[in-house]
Length: 224
Image 1 (cartoon, rainbow, N blue to C red):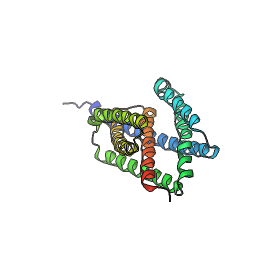
Image 2 (cartoon, rainbow, N blue to C red):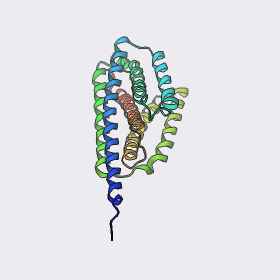
Image 3 (cartoon, helix red, strand yellow):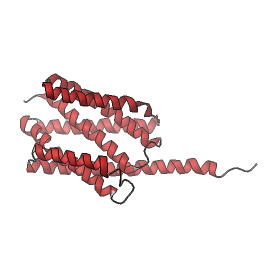
């Protein structure tokens, strides 16, 4: 009885494609994070206003909703990705300046939040990569949780409830940790096959995790 050569070739090709996707995603993610940090530093130095930060955020939303998905498979995808992450990085400036000027240990809080974010991301990613566990079942729960958190943030702003901000930050840290598991799992199990979109998903997980971890640290650290 003759063997079908494709029976071995197909799984092998699938593994190679997945490994290539993982390699490209994490390489691009590393570069975009560095670029984001550089743009955030520029924003801090020039003391960008909250108005500029809002404009950057709106422009980034336009890119991620309407532009990047359309050009995800073209040569324009990479420069658009750097533009997207650069805008979000520059938009961090006012928030970082707030911690640097309000807290005497502001720089330590920022570095601690950045380090904590890195540890959480690397730990969760390594867990998924090692166990190869499929976390796709978390998608619906995470989406609903994110909507609840957004509604909570709006309510906190309208009714000025300081304690709610802390609860939402803690909730967002848990949600972004879940999204890291979910998005990493999608890369491994074929849920996402485009490394640009995979990079953007993980980048947003990391950025939002950093912002809320910094917010939580600032709330408990106080001004020395």
